[in-house]
Image 1: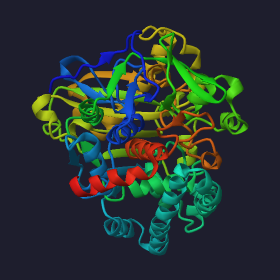
Image 2: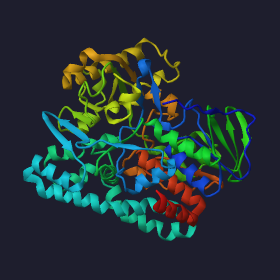
Image 3: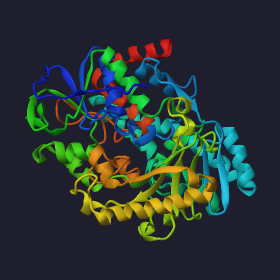
Image 4: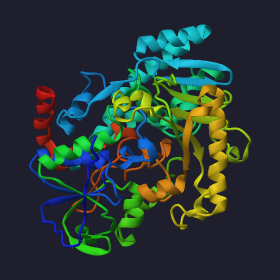
Length: 532
């Protein structure tokens, strides 16, 4: 497939007063752009990186090896699902998906192996087999998941309510969701079972929202687990096809997407947007949509005098987790190497919280946690586009304070100590991989590690976080995480507005667009229902 090139931003570009300037080309920004453009709005998208797409972008190394950086699978992508229809709409039917089949996830906890299969009743029967003495707890868990759906939908919907509805109905919808959001996942699960192994397995996929059971909000857990309840899909042709197909559609709608357009500041006057500073130069504009993250927007892009108390309070909400990622390339196809399509969640034992919060993990001889993904095996086009090769990714949790001293060092030249940390993780990751798949040892031709400072450089998240604002209970208490801000002409979009992941970011785009074009969104949903 021919690699697409994108326009660099130049200082002579100007914006009209009615142009919506979107900061960041992640899925939240791109989804907002499509809905606005389809409603007749003028839109421009700015990306500070050399490639668009946020965490849907990919990178290449020798011999045609390619890895995604953030998309390992997406749920709710069955042929007739609502999410599938919306992505068809965003991409003008050009984005295709490959099902991962069953199992789509496998958890290793201690010396036991557990498979996650698509479909609620399939899930139920599988877990009955694993835990025959805990069927009532399993039933109660699935009931809680089902009941959570409506509450969570109403909670997110109220974020787009205009003034009067926000004042009258907003508090009611938020109050209804508190039974989910204000309790931790462990609190809820320990109320239905005292089987710690069952709790560990039910929480094995918690890396998808980046927090252990005793830290995470049960609302976050429910949303993510429900998202994958029918199984997983992977974008055909790789994660980059998500943003490529959406940008193709945007360009057909007259929307320009620029790379190397770093927004340094949003200029305001009398609580209205007056312009933005791009690559050090001021550009006049009156409508800005920030997909740069809530912390970045309120703490770095806006002048302190414009910030309200609720935005100052946002500083107290922690960023999400950091990670180390080992990227592995092999010299045979995934079919020849018998690599699976499913992802692996590997835990040394059932004490999930201790494992995921062990800050000494990097200094130990062996990893106690790892997430392993096989992107080449998931992609039906890989074997024809990248013959006789395969790729694997192995991810571990990290803490930014262990890497902050390297943040100002030049990329690819951060010193021997930094390289040693990466090598230690690489060696432990390869050791675990070879333990699971001994036959891979002679076929590894490439292995490199990215760290939280790599994430900081390319995503502009100041603490190297990958999921924006933490998915703990505090997240749901904030009134700042909504599309509309107190500054006229300034809106937010992205995973901080809704939840982590491709689906979450896309949903934020819908909320932000709905906040702007209001009831006219119904026309677009009718089109989605009729044509996609």
